[in-house]
Image (cartoon, rainbow over the protein chains, first blue to last red):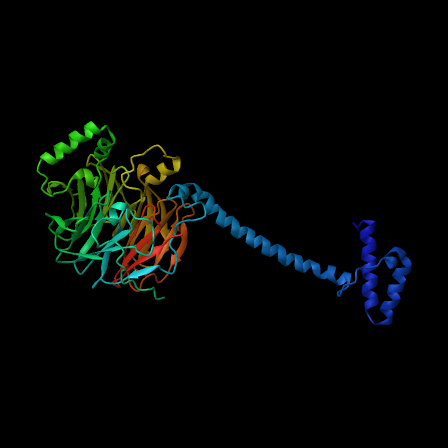
Length: 177
Length: 302
């Protein structure tokens, strides 16, 4: 038994306390027997708590096991997340100064839906500089839309241009999921 | 919001010039139209293909970019030279940042057009079937790739010679993409090993439901990503070079991690019908997707 003296005394005290808490006289006898065998344990005043010391220690094992499993799971998750971050930290820092935490990936729900084409939309293209996108469709038209919702600073050239691209609020519909 | 009318049939593809001053669109009515993005006027219509044109891309010319960087005297001379020769498209190649346009067509050819004169400078006939898609390496314009129904991807360089063929897909190749980069990036000072590696990537999506990633310098396929349940219609390589975003006829948009070679995120039911195309901005957090359900959806990236 690998217990220090103090631990042994605590163990005995716990046993005595537990036995004393049982109403059966046989238990009381056992408690007295131990008390006489180990006077230090008998003298030890355990802390006044609802659950006896021994029971608390007994149930500690499964409690701690569960906690360890939970922490391991969280650690594994974080490792996965950080593995990606370590890879993109350098590159995304260069791409628009977004900082290491943003991976710049699309997420649901979609921000805006632009209706207006009469037929299949065959292709889209985003302007290399301004927040403008064009879409071509089977109906033979090309529609030019600007992203008024993004509120990013547009190039000064854009704002002095013809009125079509400045803040005409487009009839954007909210996404219906 | 503007509508540009002019084509008489399906518009198959639209693309911006590297400086964003011009727009090119191609259509099933056998013509390619060049639009001025400031005035929204159609500058020119290019005819010459015998069948529907599936894709157009601008092709930046590297030496044009260098002359803009040199001393102003050099620049002045250049400008004088171009304006004195009657530029019949009304389009100055120097402002557009490129001198050529590439178009891929169902008549099995890829044509190279001169943007200022509007004439077809060269025709590439290496394909044996409908050429569906084109991709140009934007940063230096050094390479372009074309692919289509014959499942082979042909890659060409600036001297207009075919550099290699990439074989591997089992069905029609619907889309190609190089890394989405800042166009006309002439500042080569901040090139890291990572940028060099990702510039080498070419992604292709095909009707065999896979997305393949190729390394152009080694002519090899480094990854086959199988996660879509239907034809892959469009791919985009994320500017960071770590992800490929693809959309397919299974109505979903998927994000693939290149290093882990697996599907990282799926945006299911991103549209109500087949998703035909995707495009992404090189720095702003915008992804745009167009679909057969007549809508264009914008996605915020974070």
